Image 1 (spheres, rainbow, N blue to C red):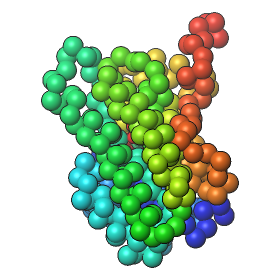
Image 2 (image 1 turned 90 degrees about the vertical axis):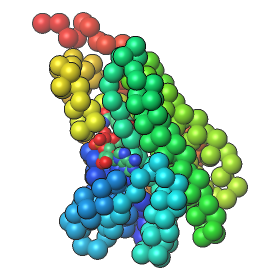
Image 3 (image 1 turned 135 degrees about the horizontal axis):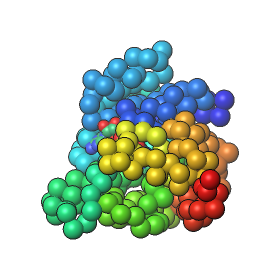
Image 4 (image 1 turned 120 degrees about the vertical axis):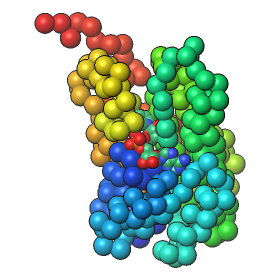
Length: 256
Ligand SMILES: NC(=O)c1ccc[n+]([C@@H]2O[C@H](COP(=O)([O-])OP(=O)(O)OC[C@H]3O[C@@H](n4cnc5c(N)ncnc54)[C@H](O)[C@@H]3O)[C@@H](O)[C@H]2O)c1
């Protein structure tokens, strides 16, 4: 199994993509710290596994809490190999309807500062352990492209892409790789907000396969990137978006 013996931390572990990462990593031989805002929910997720998963509460906007999460992982499992900064939020709203505090600060704190906290604390932890490590960040195709109703989200994901590059450069001398994954549209509670807006079918038809990406497909990309097989990937953002950034909406194939 490609992650045999590795210990990984996943934030946002109780969400759609996070749960799939926990599942795929355990199936690939890893032991996992599943971290989320709600500690009870994280503990409930961990209870589904036979000791391979530890559930912990973390608020990624709090640097001390992120450091404590890493300490807990090392204390509980004895080491640490992979840190996945996956927690993220989005609240679809047109720019001119923004409340500058509610619609900028919260998303930026979680998606941008939260990932910064994870990179910084993980880099320090790997250096203290004196071993190589892998830091993976969940970006989005919206880090590279404009879209309506997601102004702050897109800016935060562009920041994730740049943090990934800068951290990869500074951490490479310590044997640490830093890579991001940019999913397109994945069927999770985050994306389901578009259902309430009446846009679900529209955004489904924009997908090349005419269907949403499933969380397990994204988790498989994370598992590869966390493995030793991905040794030549560093500083990149890997698109996992079913062609969404490469092609225009295929008008002709949607006729009839
Ligand atoms: N679903 C998509 O289409 C899509 C596409 C591109 C990128 N992403 C990214 O994937 C990641 C996971 O999203 P998802 O779709 O699984 O969403 P989700 O809403 O299903 O899960 C997000 C999880 O993050 C947790 N969380 C929120 N704030 C937190 C905080 N401050 N500290 C710790 N945990 C916190 C939530 O409790 C939740 O469990 C996010 O970074 C998101 O931006 C999702």
